[in-house]
Amino acid sequence: IQDIPGVQAVGAVSYLPLTGLGAGTAFTIEGQPPPPPGQDYITDVSVCDNGYFRALNVVLVSGRLFTEREMREKSNVVVVSESLVRTYFPHEDPIGKRLSIVMNDPIVPTEIIGVVRDVRFQNLTASPHPTTYWPHPQLAYGTMTLTVRTATDPRPLEPAVEQAIRMLDKDQPVSDVRTMSQWVATSLGQARFSSTLLATFAAVALVLAAIGIYGVMSYAVGQRTPEIGIRLALGAEAADIVRMIVGGAMRLAAIGLGAGVVLALVLGRTLTTLLYETAGTDPVTFGWVVVVLGAVALLASYVPAHRASRIAPVEALRHQ
Image 1: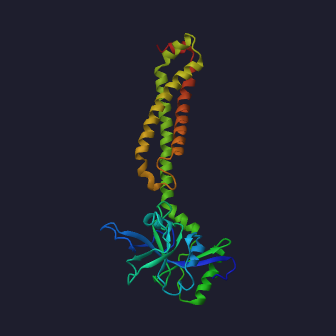
Image 2: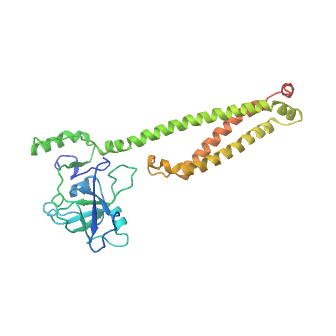
């Protein structure tokens, strides 16, 4: 497969990122006391080769990756993720440290030889889990996923890759072939649906709010028609009438927006799972919401205010 024109890197991994699949196990660290009962050290477990890191551009932060010998023979070495280092080795260099996982049979200490950047195996919204990467001879896994990095659009190369696999084993099944862009889209599917649904409800609520403000202001202006006529008869300018009505409406809108912001800050945590790289209390988002709702209130109150300012004083006084 590596010799196919356009292929830059080829690797294999037990669980592909963003699929929601994975395996995890408890582990211990040599030289450290075991954790208290119920507080086990936990790591996600991934079986892979060096080609996987290159194919998915998983950057090596420190140490090294597996040697050719380590990928052919059991050598008791492991590569770990940055999140595992932050969680279990916060103030020390993990290279050369040894850990043991419950999955290994027998359980033997394994040396940490390298640290790589975090990868999101579950989805794009979940924080990366501490992860250990094992060469296949050390932790054999029955099903592997082939990862291929290409210099161009990967889809035209799919038949050539499948043919190369069948040349080695004509009975080897090849299924669920996707690009990483498709996996990303699948991972974001539920979040996009939820976001679209929330955006639809928000748009409907915005329209209803505008209609409500306009209706209330129209009714309030109608009730104050005699007062407006008297003010106009006593020399008030049209701009004074507009300023009086819109100012009163905006004061009420400010009170409502203030109460809404406080309530949103309190309830924002419940929406965190629907957000990606955005906090439930994002100040930019809150700022835009205040601006948009304020503009809606301004427009909805200006229309009846402008209409009231054009009433003839005599016509207005007839309502008295």
